[in-house]
Image (cartoon, rainbow, N blue to C red; front, side, top):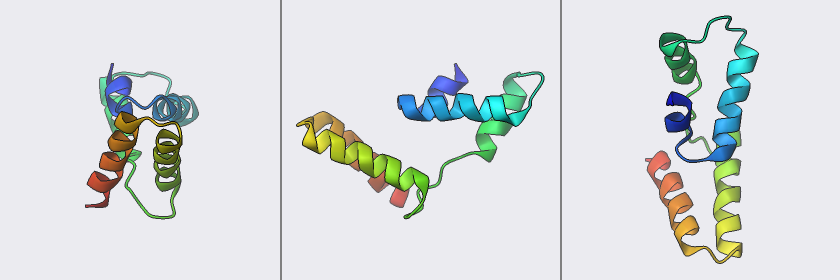
Length: 83
């Protein structure tokens, strides 16, 4: 459940979290170890970083796909993280 919350509704981010868990080498996955792993991997909006390009791509796809709700969602996420 925490992985779903941490992904903020973004399936690509959920896949990245699952990949991070598998690459972490944890032999026992519990709430504490998952919280520590997620805390270590908090994505900070850094212009030029992977997160920046992933979110910008999602925003562009929403605009091109004529999805005003999606475009507003991604624009808001970008603006919030730039604060």
